[in-house]
Image (tube, rainbow, N blue to C red; front, side, top):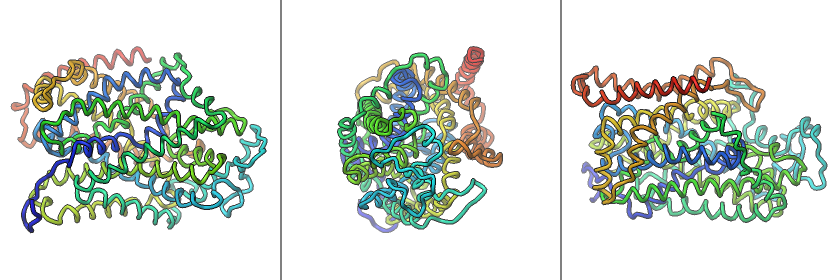
Length: 568
């Protein structure tokens, strides 16, 4: 349709099947596959960790992946309005998912940090590979120095050059969350650059996103393959790979292992955020989403395993070069991306080349997830107000306004207390408990109120193939039960938030963190209660539909009580 002033534009579809698959792959294959899964695997029993991982894949990951993709493809609506068509009482799930995605926009700061590292990767001397810089202290230790003999005392009483670069040059850490400090202007420029890139990736909707993903979703695999090959050729690489996967079956008795496996699946598969619903909504009605979901889930898990080889082969090399155990060099999250891996790269021949490859991979992995999350929010809002926003030029203006709002809200991240705020969001606003809570009610709403049998008929009508019966079993029983047990355990086992093992957050910071977490959780029951009280969905109208859900919740409660008795 021509862009005529005042005329409502068509919603649009993916230009091809490849665009949809690449967008989905770029969304689900992200930083968690590279910097979280390998570390969790090593810390939670090595190869034995794959058992709870696969249990959550089968009971939660794949069923919810198919559920949400089918919801979007069937309704042709975003992550909020689709619930209005399928189960109005559960529309709060859509709002909660979008709020968590909004909190997730703060992860753009990771891309800014990676871009900062990337610019320094082109220098003749990597700044995190020497102790001759203005930000270094007397305790600085250059681990990349050849013929360096290390002992435990030296490691305890010194700080690696890579750590000082990260904490004193990049973050300029203050003494705690109580001290704001000044803005890091170099990181500010990097943040501006990343938001500009994000804007132009989605400003035209699926027309621009569908073209961008041809590069952003595929090139990280080129970088990952190059890093994997290089890592496996390093001395000590085999030691790192074996260490990562060596099975410890005794760890399977620890509930924390199962909890971390479940959390990894929910984040890695991007379920309950609404992104799968929005991406699926741009499919043609007769697209075979059943087959697509199975292949995408396989790709996601396979990428995690390959990333584990790439990461721990390099960590094995670094441990061997320093003469220490791998436990002393293994990190996850920002610690892996900005301390451990750069430090290992500095010890390789041609360190600049491998640093560039690594940080390009980190930027592209994070960029894909970031702009797809933004596109999900934009799609959801535009589907709520199509008469206002789906007109010529208004989408571009709305996307610009959204990006500017997120950018200004993120300025606190580039101050000296930025990392403390980042951790607060990461551990509360975007934590696994919030996603697990949404999973419980999403599977209950679709499995019992909307009807799993009805959803099966819809998928069969769209794909001309009926899903395996195990999906119905998961939607109605296994997924809500597993998610609820995991949610309760995660809340009960919550520990005080710390930073760098020495800084303990004050009580008011924990209160703020719980407020952020509850802001999304309470939207689900709050919306349902508000809708019933407003008369749009009276108890009389929904009585028959929610009776089975109430009965099932009673059975879930009994199961939780039994689980706690066993745990105690």
